[in-house]
Image (tube, rainbow over all chains, first blue to last red; front, side):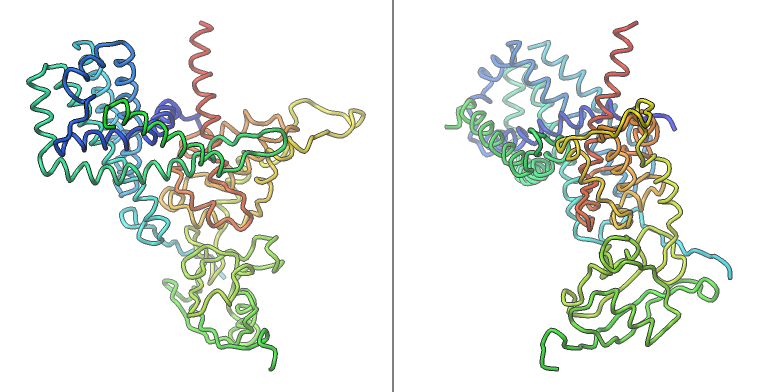
Length: 113
Length: 130
Length: 252
C-alpha cells in the first residue's frame, strides 16, 4: 500500500482550519455590519484600497483567501462523501479546481490594486 | 454447522441519523458550506475592489439585499459553531509535554479562546467599529 | 428483602437473535429477566442464558472491563456489557451485536477484519538497534513512559470500530484502535519500527480515512482517546510528506 499524498491538502486544511476558526466570525461580522448599512471605516473604498495596495495588506488578504479556499474545498469534499456522494474523485477535482482558480484570481486582483 | 455471517448494511445517505453525536459531527461538516460560500463572497469583494470605486459601491449595495443579510446571520452562527468545535479539539492534534506532564486540554483550548477574543477585538478596533 | 441495594426488579430485554442455520435475518426477541438492581447487563445476560434460554450466544470472560470480549450495542451505544449498569437503564434495554461487524450468531460478531488489521500495524516493539543480553535492560524515564502510556491501555474491545461511522462506510479503513496502537509503539522510546508502520497507516485506507468524528474517543471504556492518536499521526505524516518531498528536491 503506497503512502498517501493527502498530506499536501491536509496541510492547508490544518493551517486553514486554524485561521478560519480565528478570523472568519469577525470578518462575517464586519460584512454583516456593511450589509445592514453600517459600513465599517476599514471597508470604505479608500481605506480598503489603501490597505490592499500595500505589500502587508496584499499578504494578509492572500493568505486568508488561499487558506480559506483550500481548507473549505477539502472539507466540502469530505462533506459530500459523508452525505453519500460516492464519486469522490470527481468531487475532489471540482472543489480543488475551484480553490486553484480562486487562488490565482485573488493573486490577479491583488496585482491590479 | 455452517458459518453464514449476517452483514448489516450502513446507509451511505442517512447513517448520521443513528446517533446524536453523528448529527453534531454533520453540523460541523455543514459549516464548510457556509464558510466556503462566504470565502467566494470575499473573493468577489476583492474583484470589485480591484475594478474601482464604482464597482465596489455596487458590491456594498449588493451586500444590503435581504437574502445577503439572512446569509450573513446564518454564516455567522455556523462559523461560530465551527470555531468552537475547532478550539475544543485543537489540543488533541498537538499535545504539549512540559517535563513529565502534558499540558491539560483545557489550557490549550482556553488559550485558543483567549487569542480568538483578542484577535477579534483587535480587528474590530482596526476596522473602526469602535 | 430489607436491603434496598439487593432489590429485584423485572427488566425487559430486547435481544437481537440470529441463528445462521435457520434464520434469513436477525430479529429482536423479548425477555423479562429478574435482576438485582446492582447488576450489569452482562449479569442479566448470564441469568437469561442460565435460566431462560441456554441457546443465547455471546462472548464474555473477565466481567471486570479488562478482557474486552463483551462489547455490544446497548440501546444503540457501543458498550462493554460488564460496564453497563442496570441502574442506568430504567426502561427496556435493547441489546444488539457490535455495529459494523458481521453477525456470527446472536450477539457474537466476526472479528477477523480487526484481527487482520491489528497484525498489519505491527503492535509490538521493533528494536531500532540489535541488542544483546549483555547490553542490559532498556531504560525509560517516566517522561518517556507518559508519551505512550494512555494508548497502551487499549483492550481491543472494538467499541471504537462500532462507533466510527467512517469504518461503517469504508470497511477498508484500518480504524481507530489499530492506528492508536501503532501510535503507541511509535511513541515508545525503545521502538525503532515507525517507518514499517507508516507504510500501513500513512495510507489512504490508514489514517487518511479518518475525518475526526471523535466518536471512537467518546465510547472508549479505557480513555485511550484514539481520535487524539489519529490526529497526531496525521500531523506527523504531514510533516513526513513535506520533508520527503521538499528535502528531496533540495538535495537534487
